[in-house]
Image (cartoon, rainbow, N blue to C red; front, side, top):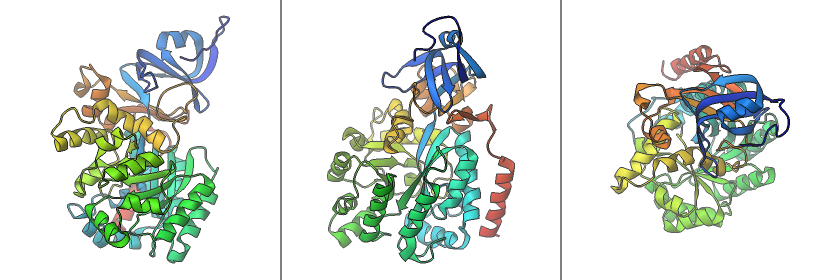
Length: 448
């Protein structure tokens, strides 16, 4: 707990006090307060500790009663294509190549524009806040629409303009793909404290080596993350060996793409050498088990990556390949998938998965000093989970409950950047009825 009001009897004013719940800090000491509180001033946490002590020392302008709740850091969704909520359920039960080339790419060509991206992303923002996500890492086309939605919806985000070497929505001339991406960064840099612009080069098989090098150079110039799909399928590995004579991560090394500012999405088919490269260069990985399972892409070597010290966070991917953005469901899947795959119930413990969804994501984004745990000085991004429900009683071990029993609908309140954006399940930043109406309108155009 931070030292507040060390002398005298006058209470220290704070903006917000979330009090009375079980506080899971996920800090370096793994502190838990059975009846705890979190104090917020501005956009930062100023104290975490015992509820009675903080209530005695602080004078909050606003009080959020979290009795019968668990208070914890907001979840970080490390891999999304948020606007693809518009394609939820459009093409299911198909192989990845068929799904992508015969259904998703054609639908995007016809129906993706900035307006649709705005409404699709705003729907995703609402879904994510309501299921406990306070930060998302996104990449798509016409990403100005996504950035607008993020700012309007009150969530924290890394938003990346998508880059490929063929015509796409918003960039009919692929020779201008990186020019468009750089303009996006310049347009949104510094516009909101919750938004970080970025570049997402789709993959090593849709971008030339020159595009990848130039995309990474721009990210280094502006100090923003570089995102890329890597080794998602066995077919991608075979193609890389055929075209480049090496596996995808090794190919990235030859292009100088690997460093602490690179986020590799999926990494489902990396071998031991590639894992060592990721760890040695400090590159991060997003693990996306539900999307990988649905597209039958394979099972990532998560235990080996974690064992090697790779920074791994958890992501849902887009709604066209997952169908939901519920990070609590993703946590459950991540824990169980590797147990059954390895025939070992001790693999990927619940506590490990919770950290992947919080501090792991923060580290992957290069934001470990701001996000991922509840501690004085960190950003005030936190959620409460209603424990007063049949499927959450009794409570012996909070990490186990979060992974194996809780679900997105159990999230009661959400605070992002010190602002209450959902109170008692009511979204305060998004007109949900209008957003759903707009997305239904878009869907009628996609499939009349």
